[in-house]
Image (cartoon, rainbow, N blue to C red; front, side, top):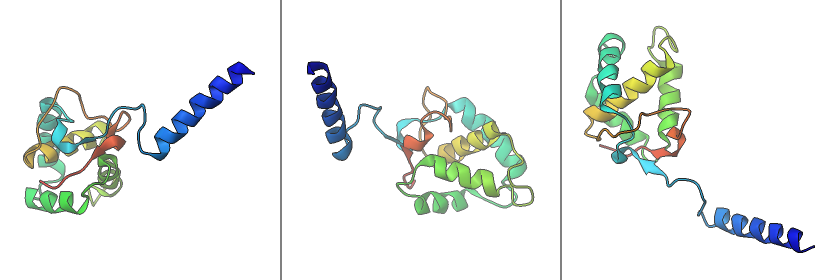
Length: 131
């Protein structure tokens, strides 16, 4: 009986934390927190120059980032992956899409960091902010 009470108490604590927005997981980040590496941004420039630049200049991405304000970065990544390049959506490697996102962030003044941007590892916890 005591063991089930302890478990129930733990469950209540977890439930209260979830309801109040406090969880045991890592804190959310923003694009201002160095969420990509300089190497990713550099690789992304090559992909951007070959697949994106003909249709989209950096001003386009400044406006795009503003329209995605406070949304998870992975949503933008999924949108770009599903719609670009316009003549062959989804044709780039997943890593190339990720590198392009890193390059776009870099060119819009967001800092590089030590940990690579990864859509399978925390990109849903990174909020977009306008440049």
